Length: 328
Image 1 (tube, one colour):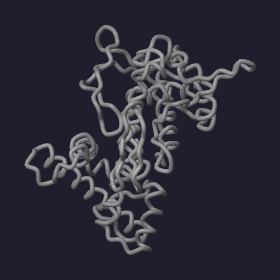
Image 2: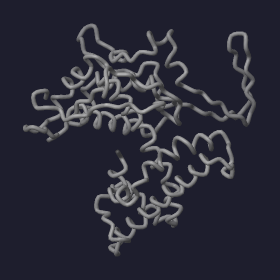
Image 3: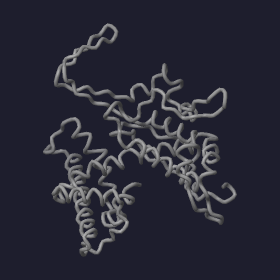
Image 4: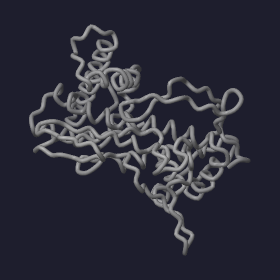
């Protein structure tokens, strides 16, 4: 979603397997590297993942070379169109030039940005839409809430004429609450802390001695299914995070005890961007498209751990059709 906005369309057109390589890197390679499997390990999943990562870095290096040529008014390699590359990338390139970074260094440094922009928002949006369309009555409530801020054209196939993004972000509290509930069910944030001095922690009858120079890993998602915190924790409840003022009746979406972005100074820096991205794209999808199960009733796939968001264990087949004017 964010790739063409930041890197331009050319990178996708010129590298048709880029997104497949990204998911190979994210789903297969990264978990192995995280647990310390050496890169020389003779596992196909490791070697395929390393090749996918190398192709991603090569693609990013090529983009930076072309952006640099474009900004300097030089002929661009392969005649690529760099006019739609985002301002963020252009400004980063200026800083890299100022500080003397090579193009391979720029690409390697940008891998983290490229990964962060894509790894979590897309799967969260998938689960969010699945919950919205499969929960009885919720789709209509969401459409009614966002309709004042999404203007559709007339005709057999309505298109979006305009979107009032500030109002979507501020006023659509049910939409936000559904995003928070999706976070609760599918996000897997983990906070990692370095122990700078020995410390002892009492946990009931158990005492934990943490030694200097070690790390603490805190999987924050463990409490998301705790029934003492969340009633009926395995069920998607749209209004769970809506806090209604008893005097005014105004409902506001609040995180409460939910920690989908980590903790403290290391909290995800892109959390606001990611949330707005999901609201924007989710609003566009529910405004334009009807989605129903290909056969029978909705059956949501089971989940397995991912690198930040849970993944479905299997595909889900649906029928997608343009929303008719009569339903607008």
